[in-house]
Amino acid sequence: MQEFKVQGNVIRKVRLKLILMFVPIIIGIVAFMFAIELKVTNDIDETMGMMPILLAFVLPTCIIGWLIGVKRQKKILNSYRLTFSGNLITREQLSTPTINIYTNEVQKIERGAKGGYAIYGNNKEDLILIPNWMDNDIELENMLSTICSFTEQPKQNIFYRYPTLLALLNMLAMGCFFVATNKVVIIVSGLLVAANLMWSYQKIRANQKNVDNKTNRFTSMFLPFIIFVVVVRIILTLLGIQ
Image (cartoon, rainbow, N blue to C red; front, side, top):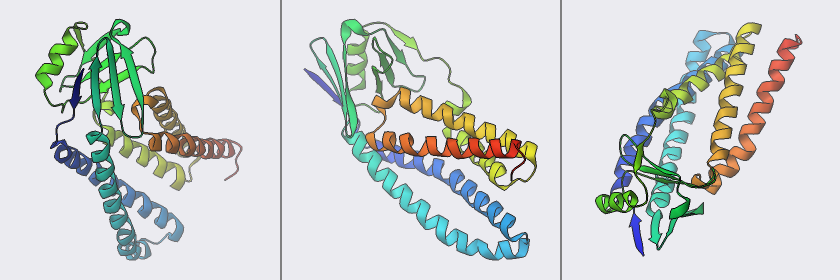
């Protein structure tokens, strides 16, 4: 049996990545709350006066969220185990369903442009994702190459490569949707928000074995509710009910 783990110092890279993700999201949240407040007060001076209160609420909340996210991600990464036992490949990870794929069921192994691998089994949900921060990566590559030849990962769209950009665009669309009074803006932005949320929900559900249980539960309850709210407002706007 051969076991592979994630490198011990990888959390430093994850910490930096989360910082780069959080900064633009914080800016987007502040801008969104500013727009909501401006719509309520209809007074730029009064809204600017509320900014210190908004920042006093948003910044600590985001910092605490970042710290919790780093701690949670560290636990998940440290628990990652990829095991080769005879003709069975097993991926184990904290709070995530275990994935087992027999070597004779492997359909393909994709290698990412920046490292890492994806092992595809017979079923869509049988997908083992291997991060590019593994210990003994040369030995791991040699073992995978004995199963089948690698295929290069197809070029991902810009939203896969830059998820923060997708979050910001969605936040902008949500801001327009909830703040705007123009019917066309409400409907167009609402359709964009609904389409993005449904796409995100479908992607998470399709790959739920690689998503931790907490995130799965959250998206199962939260995203359908938000989609429902957005669709209801679009319908009311079309009926002329504001």
